[in-house]
Length: 166
View 1: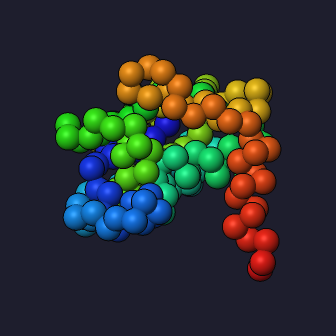
View 2: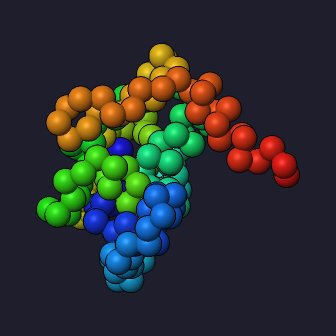
């Protein structure tokens, strides 16, 4: 699941920086909504409605999904069409790498699906995919075609290269 809406907020993102751009639409935080969401999130954690969680801020949803896959060494199948998003967001890369704040990617016990969805009924949430035994991260884009299909070990090796000198 993802909790929260992805917006066209690429300004200052790591993705644009890699491409040599800055962008002009920086992430903005709706303080009132954020504090209420975080309180609702905390009660969900306290109630054990959430099995695992990551916030897709630096690097966006794409980076967060990769980190989750690496940490669990399990695969995922994700559908970008299911992400709650602003109307002006129509690019796979922007959906994957927007650094919109106040969002969470979570896994839950499927037996508690209805309880989880009821708990977050006042927020934009969506079941965006599933965990798989196949050790691959597969992400389907807005047109339904695969935009990412990679094995978890490749992700793990790439991620660890960042820290080889530390």
